[in-house]
Image 1: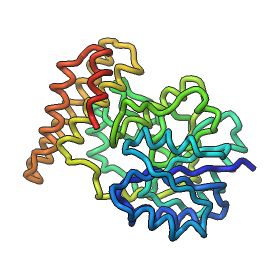
Image 2 (image 1 turned 30 degrees about the horizontal axis):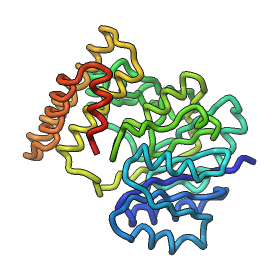
Image 3 (image 1 turned 90 degrees about the vertical axis):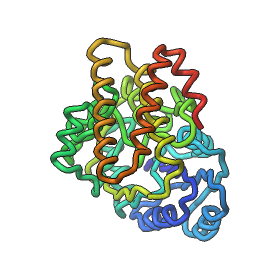
Length: 305
């Protein structure tokens, strides 16, 4: 049986990670190790580690902040055959690791996997809106010309082009070929579709429908919403230019997707009377217009923390 190393990257979420660790303790098949990569500005997550270290084989690594950076740091300490990244605000069903083992055994051709998010069900209207504007939506598990992913619409075994980062596993040998892109500094949401898309060019990735979890989506955000939206907008363009050759349909799809994001942020402004998200998206698009060339956006992205 292959050994599984679980890596949890966290920052200032001690309550969330305690729930996550409880779900790992309750697994019917235990991991070989759990590696906590902590960039918190307080000691509360380390206190959680001290509490749970007798119940699990835990490693605690203090780290600088950054989703991609912390993922790479954790990898340096991992000894398992399978590397499973989970977010600090998820709960795994008790048979998750059992079915993960089973998936890799029954499908030796796969090198990476996602499970099923049991609490992610976008409304019909929201999903149609996202399909129209090439935004992340439920469809066929592929990548769109805007470089936003399509999440699987069916709970069945299927091959994927990208994996979502809240629960993604890989055979360790894939990391001999590539690592997470540390140009994506601080909190990001593009390091996982970037890494997994590059991996899928040479290896099979798949959805394992029996690996199930709940993603609570912690309210403890790392950054203010205006800055976050600006940064994520620029990161999206950086990944788009990095992985896609420019064609007119792709340029149009990327532009159309950001029009959709601005429309959605405008609706939120009307409902919530807060303009942070819209201002951030607007500023991010201005940065893109000022740094259209690939080498320009590559240098610009390094300035965000």
